[in-house]
Length: 228
Image 1 (spheres, helix red, strand yellow):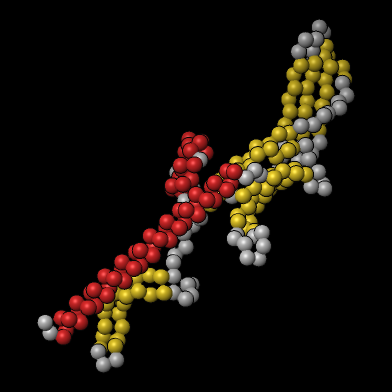
Image 2 (tube, one colour):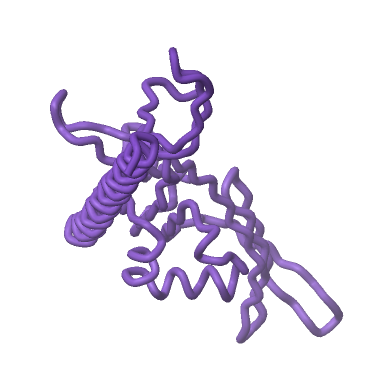
């Protein structure tokens, strides 16, 4: 076996080892991400959301966001994913984030009744009420009441990463606030499918020029210090 064949064989063996090394590293990262995903879901499902009212009387809510790949999300949140398909026509593979909120609105209204004549034989007592958040109109007959109402609300959602301390792990939270003072946020749940960022380690073909060896073509492993 001449020197050139031996060099080619060594180069091919080295490339095969590099490919195996990169693939093994990628599999380790994938398993690690999947484990972190299950931990994130378990943490969110076992810890209750926080609910309170701020000094302006607005209902607030805060909960941890479950971050996991779509495979874990589909297995854990079957009902939510089914609703996406049936009601919103969103395919799970296209899901980026999902937040569900439940609210109740309660208030006591004081209205003034006024006599209204619909015809010579039909008399009723009517009322109307309006403020920033609700509009209500109605009238009472002898045995029936007819009421038309419209309730408005405005809810702001925000997601942000936070740490318990400087060295703590980042945790994604979702915060909600209802601007209607008569509305109470009673439930909140949020899931997120992190977008996979390209790793720094890669393998691929390269073309170069070796000193004393002329042009060189081959396969190599690269590590990116900076990505643009």
